[in-house]
Image 1 (cartoon, rainbow, N blue to C red):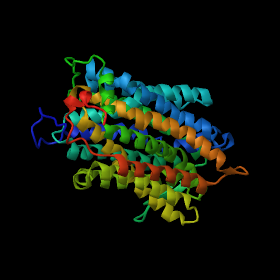
Image 2 (image 1 turned 180 degrees about the vertical axis):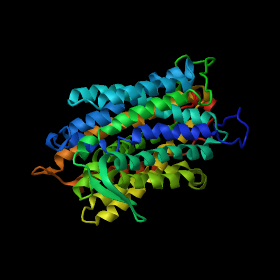
Image 3 (image 1 turned 120 degrees about the horizontal axis):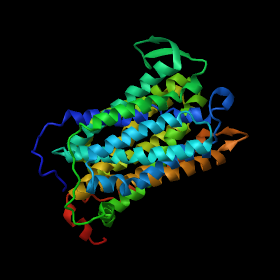
Image 4 (image 1 turned 90 degrees about the vertical axis):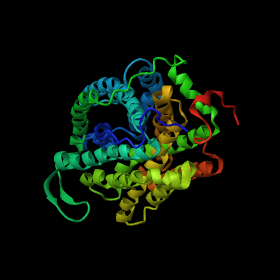
Length: 439
């Protein structure tokens, strides 16, 4: 089992790790959930008029390129040459400038290439913040979820603040959900892109803060010069191979969720200004699940938790696909996202940390990110375009057929995990992973 032997047991969590996670996901959450509405909206309505395939390339394939580069760039440099906090600082500063520049573009090719550049800079930092946090925790299995939950808090904070500040007028607050109401600004669609500029400013501020994070030096004394090659030896573990297969499926439909939910909610009658707050219901649920994730892992184990995540993807998309249901129920089903993300993504990262050796921890996290944030989203972007094409009749997208297909993929992932995944984190020591025989 992987433990941080150099960290005293029961050491309090450094508050800087909470702030790090808050900013890490705030700079992403302020534009990611609602940007598809801007990209797909007609030019006359203030959008860019891109089709489903083009949106998939911009938001899925571009991010995937960044994830694929992660172990070769961020993982290698942070594991072997530069301290993690300094790498994060430089990446966030560059990312902030890129987001600002992207917001002024109007052509597909400009968006695609600049989005790829941004992804190469930003996506690797997701794995690095995980590994930095875990390297300063005395018990990652129970403490990491409490740190990671602050990323969810950051996502929620900007998801609610952005529409209130930039997209609506005549704002009034209430005691009932969604706790505020107002009217769309006349140019609300075109103003969605302001989220990228706000993200750019936050990213630069966050970059400065990164310089003050706990020092996390590279492992220059490691035997293997190329950390990412050592990290990929984790694939010799049967449990990791099974988790990779299931994670590919989950990551594909996870990306489709962010590509299609915004226009889907609009199609069933939800006002644009309420889309991000409605989607943030999932993040509120995520906070709850994250708090108890360590307990869940102790009670039902990694196999149970990972399977629960996949099954919740199935349930959520099954509800989405049943378009005859009341809009309120469809919106409430967003709460399943808390189990989807926490049990599939956070639990998987914790598992990787527990079977990886300390000297390749950054590369192991970013390497697994290739699956969750790289190859999976590439499949998701392509699948999104295909499903949109085959589910469109007379120019109208049949969301019932579309979401049921995604539900089937989630169910298949759950079956794979419950039947084939066996927890090896207690049986395999990280130091012997490279010597483990194929079982």
